[in-house]
Image (cartoon, rainbow, N blue to C red; front, top):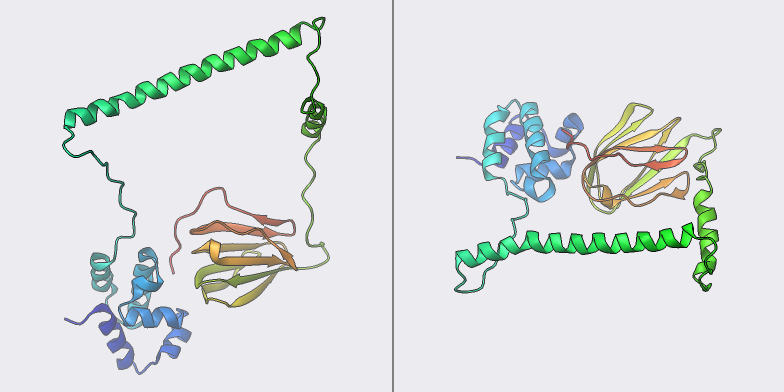
Amino acid sequence: MPTIGEQLRSARETKGLDIEEAHRQTKIHTRILRAMEEDRAADVLDPAYAKGFIKKYATFLSLDPAPLVEAYRQGAPDRREPAPLALERPGRKPSETRASNGLLPAVIGLVALVGAGFFVFLTKDLYRSVSHPGSPAPRSTAKDSLKPAVRAAAATPSAPAKLLVPKSQPIQLTLQAKQDCWMQVKSDGKVLFQNVLPKGRSETWTGNDHIELWVGNAAVLSMTLNGNSLEPLPSGVMKGIRVTRYGLRLPQKDAARPRP
């Protein structure tokens, strides 16, 4: 029985299309198209992405995508980290394992009790030093001399956000990929780009109010806003990365993975 890649390649050749023409019509990067036709989708895509791209490409080639997606799902590698194994000493009895596991709550409780007692001791000592102004003042140290400055800094309200891009200028965001990275770029709510940014490629997008990003591997991107370098992004899939005149604002929670 032909493999998934062989079926896709045969259908494309039957239509008289080359890889470049398939890329122009589907907007799927040629690197991904070749990987799917060579049964190497798992090498360049996360399994969640790969199923969506196979479905889209099969539909474009007038193939039924359901059997192909199901065949890929059954053969796709499981990339979840294996659960850590509990190691036991040779000859250790199950009853000994249960007994050692039962000690953990007791140890945690003892540590919490000691910590609570230490906190009460510190609180009482602080109360005595504050409630009795007539008592002799403790000897001053170099460390104590820093306390008023620390309190003054804490009482100072936080400064307003710095405007990186003047309102008279448009926002210009430049992204450079250290590795291949799927992304979607919106400028003022309009989608400008939805594809793979190849390794080493640099692209610039312009907006009047804000630019929003949805990326598959945020850590591989270097970002510059009107010539100002922005902070590195954490790894993983991120949706709702927002860039304004004040800089970068990250989403509160990672969003679900996007569909191609």
